[in-house]
Length: 328
Ligand code: DGY
Image 1 (cartoon, rainbow, N blue to C red):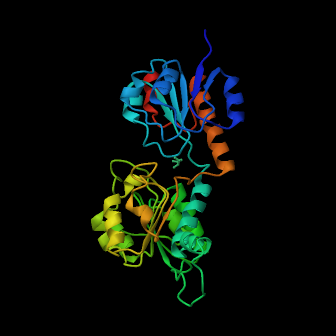
Image 2 (cartoon, protein in one colour):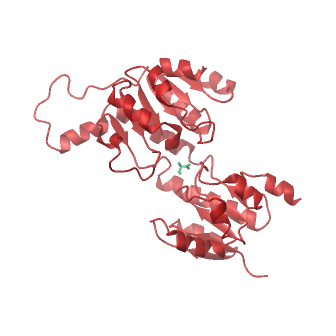
Image 3 (cartoon, rainbow, N blue to C red):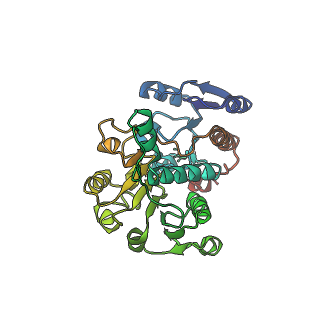
């Protein structure tokens, strides 16, 4: 029988390639920039396993060109780039990398919250551009974080890790989630509230839900109207959880005080996007899990998931268990 073939269309930790080579042949493209669709489809047509980042969309049209594919291993916790229905229909396993990026993403969430509150990026720019000619008492006045109220929308692993950080800052913690998390309430003193209550009371509204049909534009014009005028919105989940046009209007009309964003409706964000022109908006290029250590661990976890699928074991982070049930 011929050896299985893994396809890795983008640069990844070298150890991962060595690990995969123990189990089969590896089609590796050692480049950072996104692969062209033509080259991607060519590689995929011969692959049994794909390891990809969340910018790679996998839908029915793509899968048509992948007759040998057994597993798509996403190097991300979010998997809105994968059409799970189409994968399952074709008997292709899908996996992700939850857990290991939790603390790293919570660190980033808290850092952009603080950056927006204390105008860190704006102040840095002010100094570097030579505008700082004189110190005066109202220079770069920000907003307190310690003791303020944080509203976390989505109390999953990352939500809980953000709540732990918030507790260290003596914050009142409100949360809204599909289900109540009594253990977190006990441990961290978080309060389960309605979305409306959370929006009305929070100084910092932090969106941490995965993107699904249910959470698409969970925050829109109606929700911005409920928020405090001096509130700051933080989004480290997926851009489409927020109605970006409504966010721009809310900021332009001073209905909220600012935003801290790691994700956008369209990525990379359009250079003409109004959000990039606002000094009260902190903008990062989708780097929630981007530390050397965490990205290395995510890549290895993705590789282990792919190998398990190829050698016929259930992958640890399987997203569509139905495929294995059907095969029994
Ligand atoms: C994730 O893991 O989902 C990060 O957002 C990277 O895409």
